[in-house]
Image 1 (cartoon, one colour):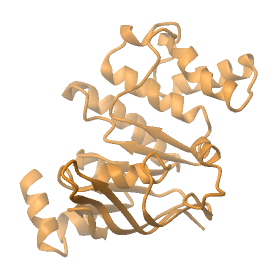
Image 2 (image 1 turned 30 degrees about the horizontal axis):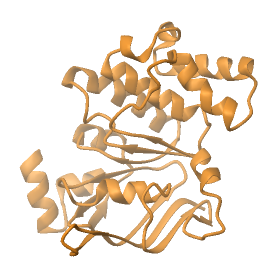
Image 3 (image 1 turned 180 degrees about the vertical axis):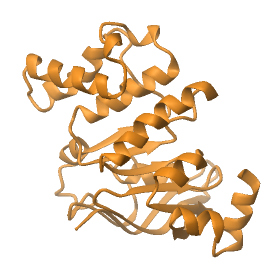
Image 4 (image 1 turned 90 degrees about the vertical axis):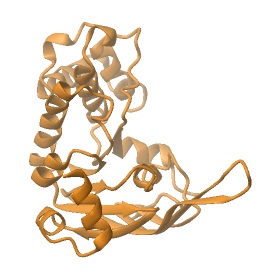
Length: 247
């Protein structure tokens, strides 16, 4: 069964002058279990908005979004439960500056999943090892580089043991030399079979890790295909123009 099913989703905003911005128009997309799906497109094309509807950080006006068959747009659905199962990593790291790295990671498993401190710390150290930062456990976020903070943010999301992960341009706030260390962690997650839906400008990662690439423009999904199809033989002129501009 598909992990994430987005069907005919629409998201509008009202501008200050009363006009309506159609941020996402009739978007339909399936992310199967274990798939890595990358959304690309120009700025303002609705990529991040669509991603954020998947865990209801943005509320879509119409359509349906199913996660393991549960429609998150159904008023009866417990969104908090869905968010426990779908991890999210943002552009900014959003770590608590007054807590250590390990404390940042174990907070949610202890509060939300009622995990014991001992169990949470064991999981936290295992995840820090996974992202290559076990020696930073007792440091505060302010003592880390941007790339290290983002790797901690990934470990924190993984601590909830999610079924799927959403990434919203996770490297866009990083200096170029720090991007690779974050992408390497994401590549390992992809190899381990984590279901992932992400927005990124990193085309090298998209080519290497994605099962499917989605091109969005002006709120619409214009084209979907494998990396080979999208990069070597795009079907639409809009996709071709975009890729010609950035590659």
